[in-house]
Amino acid sequence: MRRPDGRRALLVARTELRRTWRKLLGTARGTLTLAGGGLMISLYSLAIGAAALFLGGALAESDPHAVRLATTGAIGGLLGLVGFVTLQHAVKSTGEPDAADGLLTTIPYEDALAGLVVAEVGRVLAGLGLPLLALTLGLAAGNAGLGVALVVLVGSLLVAVLGTLGGYGLGLVTKLVASRSAVVARHRASFGGLASLALAVGWITMTTIPSVQTRILRLATRSPLSWTADAVLLALGNPSADPVHAGVATVALAGSLPLGAVACLWLAGRTWYADPVQPDHEFDPDERTLSDRLLRGRVSTATRVVAQKSWLRTKRAPITVQYAAMPFFFLVFQLQTVVLEGVVPPTFPLTAGLATAAAAGAAFTLNPLGGEERVLPLTLTANVSGRAFVSGLVLAGALPGVALTAVLVGGVGVAAGTPPLTLVVALATALVATVGAPAIAVGTGVVFPKFERSSVYGREVVVPSGWAFLGYLVVLGAVVAPASLAFLFSVHDLFSLGDEPWLLGGGLAATLLLCLASAAVGFRYAANRVATYRFD
Image 1 (cartoon, rainbow, N blue to C red):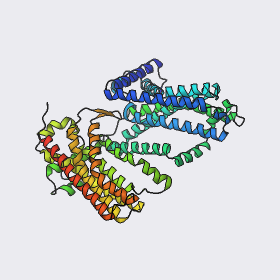
Image 2: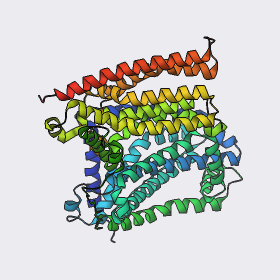
Image 3: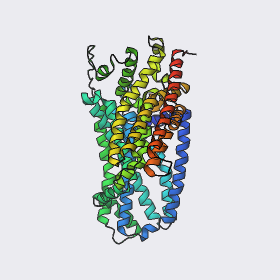
Image 4: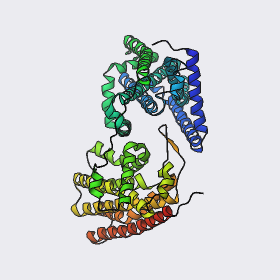
């Protein structure tokens, strides 16, 4: 391990930042993301600056415990946010240099790593620069004073750089484990998807649920992490400030940066030059999988093979269906009620079932033509009819969706204490939607096909069109509306529309008829479109 050369490291960093800039400006989506992000950051910066200007003086009047609580929370939030973003970026994109074989035989790996880390710090500061500037100017111009503003600015910069080093180091650890473990290498896509979901859920939980925030902040204020607040109290001239704690916190924060850099150098040397394991994928032509036992003899061979192809592709690359998890984000507010109040909302069984139905429909059938990518010509010329191909896609979403919906709705309904009749209607509505959703999705998918690749977490994949997803949700929402309204009337006693069984039965019957009609139209149109599709 040697000390990086500054000139070569800066050349690598400049190249990486240029690539990022060109990637943003090279596509309409990137340009819109840049414009939207810039607008959002500007608005946040104005709000932060105004709050610092008019409310910064309250720091001087607050009791030391409140200052410690606010400072610790700000440091923990900034450190976690920067570390989380950098970790994701390192694992999926910047954890190793582009054209590594050429670069690492041209310059020492220490120079390459230093350049990558400097570029990552540059990206972080590009996002945090304007808010930090607004915060500093607001504190300096307000009653807080210039001393507090400088302490906050320097501390925020140190924490941001430390979060970048920590996140990048954890990303290298992740890549090192994946290159050394055959089990992780064989199922890396699945592990990666689960880890990303767990990190996102954990972050949302910590940042949106007050009880969790309070518990974490109380633990943090009793640890040395809260000693950084003494530096702010010293700048405020508060007599309760401890100069020793402030000095130790400053030295520890500044000293952790070279330690983090050395750790990243050590990890990079072992990650980039490691000989990754090659997991064996043995093929047994006589092996009968679970899907073979379930489907053989019950559906045609072509339909079964298409469904198995969809499941196998998802197992190997879950990122290709990550958009299907979007409907579950609508459950966040009800999950907050469960966590905060310990009560399951009465509408939760139905909303959970409908979210599962929407996800099952979107997973495999929302882009039937574009989803085949490079093998589309082979698919269209194979001895598989359009009807069999579409049936396989529909089956791939409906079969696991029905099982998951039944378990989820039943379990949540029992936990919520839903009356038996109402629970049966909710379960029936969710199952009808789950069976019909893939056929509805395949219809909208062929109306709005998408063949262009999009960058998802640093990987180029084909994802469904936004118009297809929107049209699918609109049609599915209209289909389930009658039964959903009847369910709401039943659990909330909103209206007296006669006998409750008739109300629930009528809503379910209307949804069933609408689902049958929409699914039949979508399925027939998609099958005919696939069978007659021609390249321009």
